[in-house]
Image 1 (cartoon, rainbow, N blue to C red):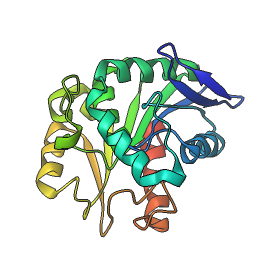
Image 2 (cartoon, helix red, strand yellow):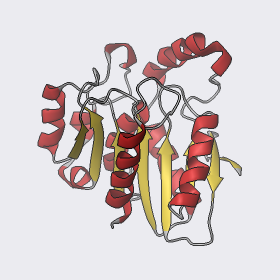
Image 3 (tube, rainbow, N blue to C red):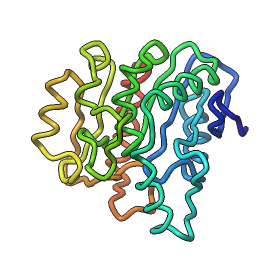
Image 4 (cartoon, rainbow, N blue to C red):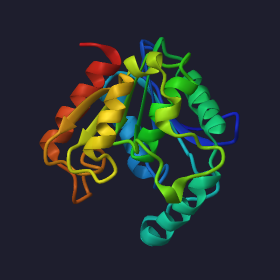
Length: 225
């Protein structure tokens, strides 16, 4: 069902009969769109979890038919985003699930926010799984109220966070992966995988078998075997 968070951010919530598991999904740079609505519904069914995803880019709808222009619009908006607003939204989304054990996940920019939210909203989430997160904010994304992930991650949040990475992803070169590992974040590195190899089957970078393994690892990390 469609929901609205306290901040006014729009979202979608899918619930099952059990309140044992919850999950919050932070979308990628292209924002909340049908891909993530479908993902939330699918994971709710597969993982038997109450799943909530929400719109990071309020008022900036991503239009698939105008892909390049919509992407440019979102990139231009990123510097005006606020960690504090994001932390409040992920906390609110966690409450919306009503679950006992809540995991957090995100992709690309959403993965970056997952790394930070595990520290900034740590009281809400048991574990977090960040898919190919930006470890250092790209120059064109930098904003006055966006902190660097490596500065925000804490020892406590790191031990409850994993990052799923591709070894040929230009956003996560080996030197930055080593810095992320040094914080204590668990890093699972997939060989010959590029940025975005898991969550969108229509991307050229998608790898079916590796994606299936990555999802399996994420579920095990978030909820245990």
